[in-house]
Length: 286
Ligand code: ATR
Image (cartoon, rainbow, N blue to C red):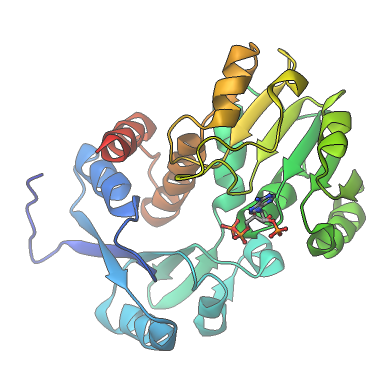
């Protein structure tokens, strides 16, 4: 990769702990190069004690934009000037825009999942969604997709983690929301008349690649299945769904559209999604 750094090059980056395996530099630099914009994107290893200094430095140095990953997605909020409504509700910011010294926070996790589904031909309106998991990603996905689907079934090994989210979704969007635990028969039963299944747990992630919360025989051909796990590129769940004839959306798609949404917030230009997809897949194959 050759890059022409000049006196005008705008600096972007990602902060996290750990950070060395982040795909964001690969995705964002590929996008900057494709659009021929004078920008560079770097990864910064930041410990929890350094978050406040980073945001002061972002203002001081004029860093244009930052992605925020674990474990800082909540901690950055106290140091921002403005936080968008979704990010505020989720208590999680993954994108910061430096708007002439005003630091504005957003969450593109839910948007990423929404666009990944939509761009891969999954229509959400009036559909029943079954979502597995209750971590930060699961909540962002549930909150965003709840605005479009008609029914939401939230399942987690520890269902109590979902109670407040279910109540908020129900009050705010007036949607039917069920919360339950994940014994096999509950998942099987929920999938009988479901249209979309999203795995937002880390089950199936390397090195536990033989695991899936969903038995192959519960997957009908008319189900759309998205797994947010992208390592391996094709999870056990994705393989089983493909074999059942279901539409499969891989975890890389969510990652790409999340990055694309950040890119668009920063640059105001449509993200070169195909370039970002190729860059991410090439990196993941290494
Ligand atoms: P993130 O914030 O990245 O979404 P997380 O907060 O670590 O991730 O959440 C991981 C999710 O995977 C949780 O929903 C977790 O279930 P619990 O809330 O009960 O811990 C789920 N998970 C992890 N391992 C699991 C397993 N073996 N079986 C079922 N669910 C599992």
